[in-house]
Length: 315
Ligand code: GLY
Image 1 (cartoon, helix red, strand yellow):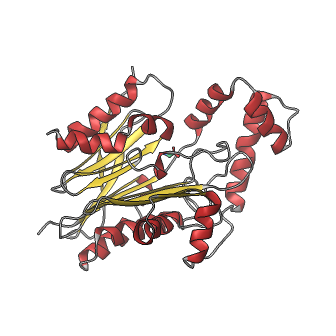
Image 2 (tube, helix red, strand yellow):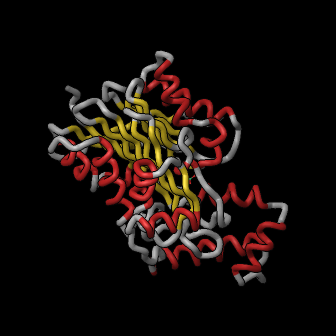
Image 3 (cartoon, helix red, strand yellow):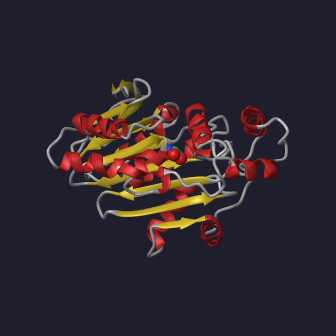
């Protein structure tokens, strides 16, 4: 019997007990991960995930999420989905009832509707205000005269500073929720959910929806998840790399550190952090932007504890 436990990124501090309670009652890692991620998605004060997330360049909230079951290696994901505040639950349905792994945009919304998920407005007054402020700043960097969003988008795309400008944005605003759980049967599940980069180009998909990049789980070795600039972890398949490093004999700590060194070797702008758990429930985190903090709770604990991982600064 494994001592069931759960870890999550900073934004799970107040909700990790929800997953721990499910594990304590003999529930599965998948149920624990989904419920914990749902609680972050429902929180209007979290501007990086679900309801209240910062919108794309046109003011529309587009969400990405994925879930992976380490026992079967089955996975489900949705990308660029609008009007649904719990994309992790829709991703779980993709995993459980479809022959597919990833549904995007309107197709994902249609699937959600058929599965009985209720639509809602994701933009809150608070996220609208933050969006307006971001947009004002960004417009000033380009040209003060562009005050209509469509016009602004056109200029953004045509402007040859697009890359440089996106890099500035990703430094300003990025966030995601990562949750990893192992249940008493030793089954590992990883869940990831995000509203992506603030002011992203409509249609931009980050690593949270990409199995192998932002999310990977395999009971035989462990699980891993990422936050930060998804473009970098997509290029390196970071979550799968961490699991592969463990497969090849590295400890969970060494695997996380190596993955962040790999990110740094790209020599690109943008922070990335990862959390991971090995098949025995040992955990670690690493980051290239700040000392990574994550929360841990096993079923013998009454509340989560804060843990620190390793900072590997880019040279
Ligand atoms: N890591 C979240 C994203 O890039 O969208």
